[in-house]
Image 1 (cartoon, rainbow, N blue to C red):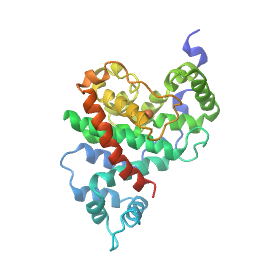
Image 2 (cartoon, rainbow, N blue to C red):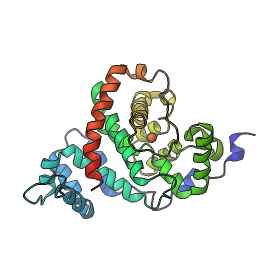
Image 3 (cartoon, rainbow, N blue to C red):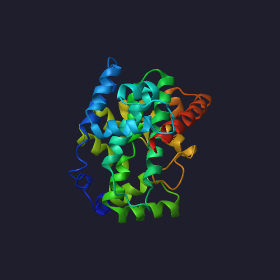
Image 4 (cartoon, protein in one colour):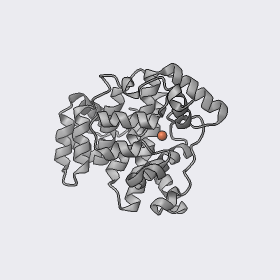
Length: 285
Ligand SMILES: [Fe+2]
């Protein structure tokens, strides 16, 4: 009685038409981030093309959180006062979040989900910067997107998701294990399929499919390990949740696989906390 006997869904069927495409601005930002020659002005131009996104960012720049005396009226001005990196982080998170409305609250609180995603992104970027070997922006984006598959499951099959979460609570097992047993695929594979559908480069979906067991990620092992460690760190620090009832464990050998010491990992977690509070406070405005 293989796993195929319990498979009730084809993961492709869970990607509705609305979910199947990423917002155009998201694509432009992702391409710009991958290109080291992108300028400040290029980013401003991309963001301005989406009027609702631009309006949201200006609202944040003009909020009491910053308390600027004069009104921030342009995206370039917002970028110079808030910081380019923070503006891009906020833009990407807002764009992706807008895609996922209507998640049943008892499965995961959407705020908590985004806190977890942003924390994972920030931590992944810091690890990548520390190692000086991987594109740090790519690491951020992967961290931000790594659990999108869970949102699809929560939204499209809430009854089965509830069952999986309560079994995980009762048995102390991991969602990715139980999902594979009950559905025939897990949230990482679901998310990978979505990112493939969005037309992102293969490194995205090939990595995200393996972030719980990065040793299986083949040539993407290092970047998968970075996201895996960042995901675990976000849980260790209690920064949001993606619905996992227990704490994930670091896959043995992960730190060694990327040459990160325990002390460096601890230092990166401290740094994550600082950046996280700043970004999330803005995000929740
Ligand atoms: Fe996660």
